[in-house]
View 1 (cartoon, rainbow, N blue to C red):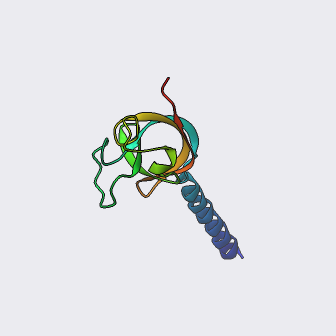
View 2: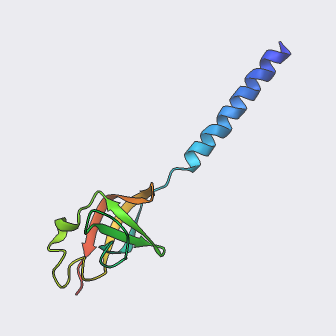
Length: 110
């Protein structure tokens, strides 16, 4: 009987630590203001797809999933993402070295 209780205790202890490790890997999405531009034209990122939206967070750049470079006007205009680094208010997480946006709103310069 002692062995059964010991085995049950050990099993539940291991499961508890495993669940804690899984939960600690989850990122919390927070609203923040970041630099945003074309990854290739302004951040010198490598890709084979041409112009693509990217953000810079804490000095590191990430391509964006969930927002399209063409959804915010002409990317090649003088103030477009290919010609200028601007700011955006974003919410999202970084996964597989990409920024997964759930909210993306460029901030207009005044």
